[in-house]
Length: 522
Image (cartoon, rainbow, N blue to C red; front, side, top):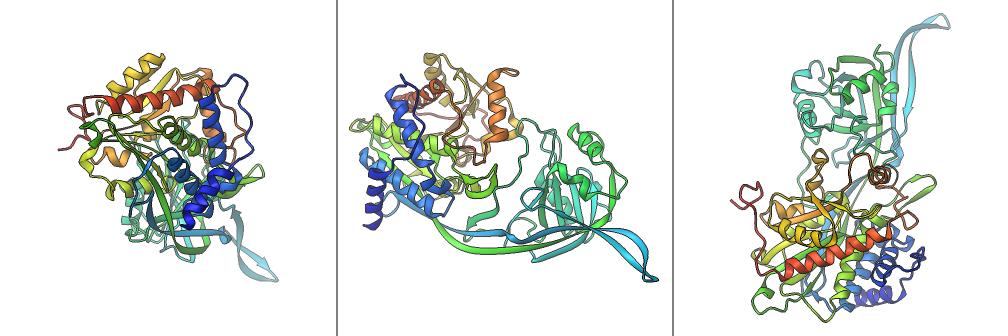
């Protein structure tokens, strides 16, 4: 009862201060913008998984779903599904990264002493670490550089910290492969240096925090005994000082996938880690719009977006609150608007609305729901997910993930053609976006599922806006209600979603997989 009262209060009282849409903006987009402002307001504190702000946002979403007439689709007859989680956080206070470099012998008071130079790396700005419950309180080891860290590069690394070029392009070693090679060779730590050549999604600093959230019963990560760190490219020269190598030349060669040398570094890394751990709970919000067709109502179209964000983190330009307006409050708002538009009227198929928690921590909410379904798996006909859209420029092109895998491409092309939108394949597969958002757990379990991204032609103003957003706003406090957007694109984005949902939910033909799709049920 207490939760329901809170939810009702949130629905009535949430009126964030939101920049007004320009005159002439259609009513649906105005309503969508207002909901986006509510969900990304400072009162929601960035909706970090397991936080009080996230709980307030979940109350808000539940209340809006209730008011739109959606039925509960969670557990125990309610609108929620609880995830029992655990957190490991590396606290900034008490965590230090110090480089100790040997300079040789010197005389002091007529005695020979060994001279060291000490340099500090700035935690969350120069370097970060993967939080695990097995992280040691202290780490001290010599450092070596081993290029791309292939298995054949792993010579003389026992009990050392291995520095690797963190390549992110096709044909190079992956992070998992580098860790595997380093661990098998007996190293105690790995530092992946940012790849400056991966310009389509450049590395950004500072990190918001070093915080990992997993399920309470999750096994330890692979090679948990190896400390996994990441280094900003600009800090490499500090780390390899005295080695005779040039950091700029190494980074340039790595960015071009050219040969990289292996060499030892006359320095050791001394790190101390201040670790905190706790258990927490965070909820998926689930609601159903019943179908109207006597037969098709037993089939379900699942529409989803993630409710969580980053919350409070390391300040950027003086702002420490990561509001998450376009990632992903705006698309939860789209779900709410779809529910409100359909109030009192359904589609032929039932539509299940899902606002997930923990997406930013590894798709936790969608993975959990896909393995703990509140409806029979065989009844889910399709999944349409909203993430990564960003209405920054006119909607002329949409990238569709899984376009060659399912017949949902037919539905999407039908809707897109009526709106003058061109549907395209993913032009940047090396980013692996298809597996980085909440439709993927369903695709891999054999349910037709899609996600979309605003597309563009190379060299256009649209590409410039897209790149600028990823550089300055993605996972940043600057992803707030003050950022620029294209109002026409926001309108068209939502219309495409509404119409696609209706097209799939009313289609007499159930979606399926295209022959040869790797995700088709075997």
